[in-house]
Image 1 (cartoon, rainbow, N blue to C red):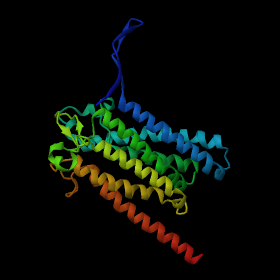
Image 2 (cartoon, helix red, strand yellow):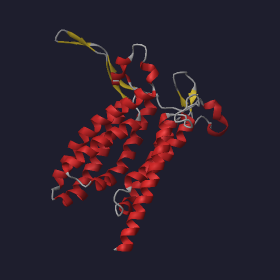
Image 3 (cartoon, rainbow, N blue to C red):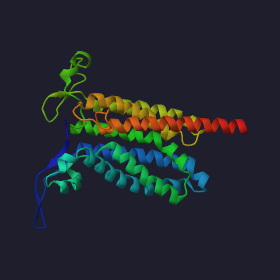
Image 4 (cartoon, helix red, strand yellow):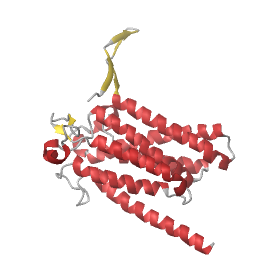
Length: 283
């Protein structure tokens, strides 16, 4: 684990003592994930969407960064709210103020996804961009950002799986699948790296399918929900123990959200395909 990349001691400036200053690997990975994903999406907006809106490439490119500001802000808020809800016991008995201490860590991806989507939907409608087309363009880059973010999770030493000896017979190939860390100082399954690999594969798949999905407006996001939902649903079996149950049958809130997301996404895909076929038949 390498949660801290660089650390500087205390220093005095204008009579005030500052520090120590620390630069965290998770923060760096998060910044890289956002910068790269937003840049690639902005490039596609300038290339594909701007001509539809009678905008120059530079205008579409720049407006995308205006959208990104709101998405990032509400992603952070949503991620924190989801974490506090899932781990509410940590904030009881007079600790409720710590729910606002985001700098201490504690963000959940699904909360960030829904918060960012909500902000994005409002901005897109106000800007009068074609909603479904925008969602189809951005979907693959969500997965790319997730993949880079999981590198940060691994370096930070969070989001690991169950204690590895429970599954050594299958997973312990010369400790290649073992995450040396955790609050209990025991070897754990590196579920961060599993999701990293899965996110990269899904990113390439959805990016490769985008020419096809663009023929079916709105198809990109349900495909993301179905595929990523299945990936996360599966990984949660090795991330969480069965000491809690959400909606009776799920062993984590994220697994419950994944199951619901898969069902809704599958229904949306069936509806979109049926609608397209009906249009072809009647047309």
